[in-house]
Amino acid sequence: MAILEEYWSGVLRRLQAEVDTFNRLIDHQGEKGRENELSLARVLERLVPSKYGIGSGLLVDSQGNYSKQMDIVVYDHSEEPALMAQTNQVLFPVENVRLCIEVKTTADKEEIEDAVEKMTSIRDLKSHSTHPSFAFVGYQASQLAKTIAGHLKAGEQGSRLDFACVLQLGMFASKAKFAPGVAESEEEHVVGVTLMHNRAKNARIAGSFMKPSDDDLTDVVYEGHQYPIVNVLGEDFVCEPSRALLLFCESMLNALAPEDRRSVLSHYLTDIGRELKRL
Image (cartoon, rainbow, N blue to C red; front, top):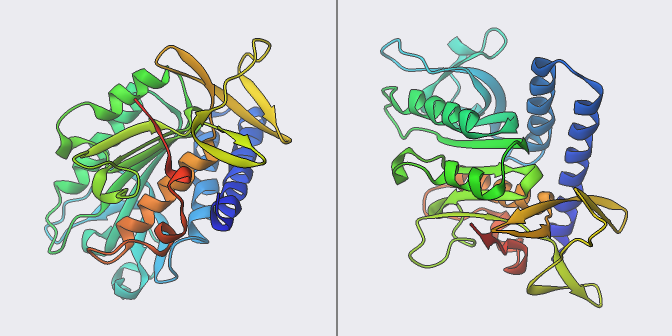
């Protein structure tokens, strides 16, 4: 992959290792969830343009309505009214928010449906501008990739999450407009997994994906890093979660970019770096 892809793959592997270590040490689900949110927020703070701030809380509109609690809120610093910035940031005028992200320790049908409800609570607000985008990140999965993909594709296009990532499965999902480099022609919504490519002379081979040996049960160690095994339509493959999160970050930056423009990151990702096994 390109230098930028390799760099961010390393950053995101460290994020995954940090979260995995913390989750092994802490039993309290609430603390796990909050630390997972903070770990992701720390990465995003270093990635989004400096004009944006990152917080958590409720979105409000001019009619006195408010949304459900949001795990991560990406808002515009330059437009934030002083009235809402005199204390710790917990209330965000809907017009100033660009993106909300729901973060879950475990992704399943219930958690994805809860995320859709939170997205709906935002879109029910009266906004004098466009409503913010909404995304989902799950660190682990309690169901097969095919099942989770079905939950992400459920419902009409307008009721689906704008983009999502489930790390343990290396799964990435997005509406086409947020991932134009991934979605194929006439594809409105894409869901797939980022599998580990086979290599020749250390170069990735397009369309050729690594399978685990019979001795590998849940994970494979490759070049000193641990990668999970995922079942894709009845076959086991080695997946590359950091690549799924990299595509998530590309969609996030596309959502924050001015209308009809792609993020700078998009120009540095390669076709093979975006390759998905569709579900």
